[in-house]
Image (tube, rainbow, N blue to C red; front, side, top):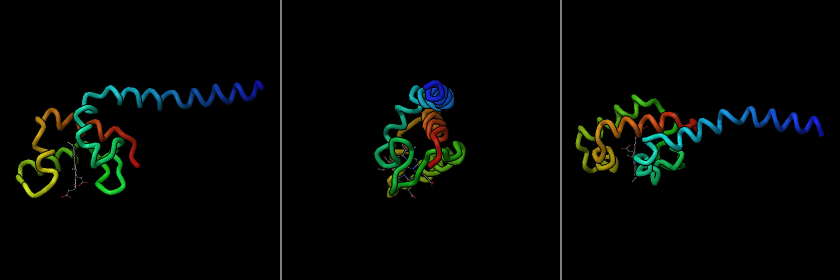
Length: 103
Ligand code: HEC
């Protein structure tokens, strides 16, 4: 019984930082903005069919998003999504996805 308690306490201690990191992410200002991307890129930034964004480099995502809106590729599905946010909002979204665990 004592061993079981110790094992449980150890498990809780090991899990605490992960749980804390997740709840911090739930309050990330980019999360609500990024919800517009969940449909295609997945709620955790991972989806079987479209590009996974979770854990990608923030700068890399920002470069791609800026490229998409600058080039005005109207036939690309990402054009309206990349163009619908201010630069500050895109930074928040890219920061949020970059902090999610990579698949
Ligand atoms: C309707 C579906 C859809 C939505 C919504 C959507 N995307 Fe995309 N996204 C795509 C598709 C499809 C591609 C691949 C486009 C291509 O390669 O031309 C893509 C590509 C990307 C890429 C490039 C990934 C890579 O590795 O090259 C990034 C970054 C990205 N999307 C971010 C976002 C963000 C941020 C949002 C929300 C603001 C968003 N997307 C919303 C469908 C979507």
